[in-house]
Amino acid sequence: MHASSNEQPLWQHHSAKQTLLRWLGWFWLVAITVVSWQVMNENTIWAFVSDAPEQAVDIGSRMFPPAWGYISNLWEPLWDTINIATLGTLLGIIFAIPVAFLAATNTTPSTRFVRPVALLVIVASRSINSLIWALLLVAIIGPGLLAGIVAIGLRSIGFIAKLLYEAIEEIDESQVEAVRATGASGVQVIDYAIVPQILPAFWGISVFRWDINIRESTILGLVGAGGLGIQLNASLSTLAWNQVAMIFVVILGTVVISEWVSARVREAVL
Image 1 (cartoon, rainbow, N blue to C red):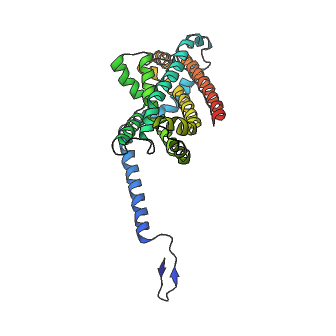
Image 2 (cartoon, one colour):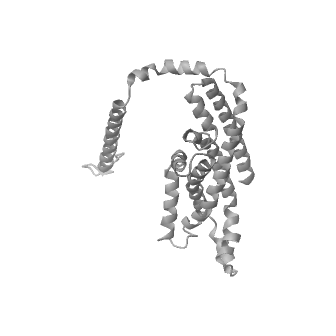
Image 3 (cartoon, helix red, strand yellow):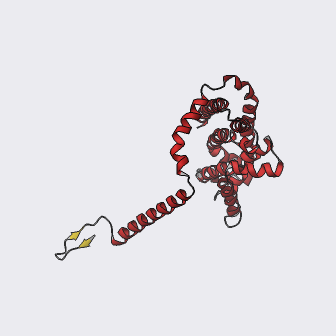
C-alpha cells in the first residue's frame, strides 16, 4: 500500500521485497530444473528411450496370458511375505511405543536430552528405506526371512512413533490433571489418562503401517530377504514374463485384500 502525490492510497498486490523474492524463487527454480536436466541428459542413452515403447509392447505381449499354473509355487512365498509384514510391524510397534512417549513433549522425562535422542531415532528410521535396511541386514545376518522382518521393523519404528507421539501431544490435559490429582503415580497417569485417549489412534496407525508393510515386503526378496521378491527375481532372471505377470496378479490381490482389511479395522476403532 503506497500513497500517491494527492495522498490517495495506491493498492499494490505485492511489496517490492515480496516481488523480488518471488523473482528470485522463480530464478532458482529454473536454474535447478536446467541443471537437473543436464545431469539426466548426460546419463541417458536416448536411443534406448526412443525404443522403449516397442520394448514395452514386446514384454507386455510375453506377459499374457499369465502362467496360471505357476500360482502353486507362490503360496509359500506369499505366506512368507505376510509373515514378514506382520512380524515386522509387531517389532516396530514394540520399539515405537517407548520412543513415542520419550519424544512427546508432555511425556518425555527431558526435553533437552531425551527428546532429541528419541526424535533422532524417528528421523533415522524414516530416512532409510526398508529395501536399504534389507540390503544391510542381509549382509550382516545373512539372507532369509529374519533379515526381512528386522528391516520392516526398523522402517516401521519411525512411522509409528512419529504419528503416535503427535497423538500423545494432542490429548486432553485436563484428564491427565484429574488423574494426577488423585495421587496417581506416573505409570498410573499413563495407564488411566493417556492410553485410553490415544488407543484408537494407536490401532489405526498400526493397521495402516501393516498395510504399507504388505506392499514393501513383496519386494524385499529382490535383495535376498525372503517373500515373493525371491520368486520375482528368479522369474526376471530367466525372462519368464508370464510368470512375472502371475506374480504381479498375486501381489495385486494381496494388496487389495490388505487394503480392505485395513479399512475395516480403522472404521471399527476410529
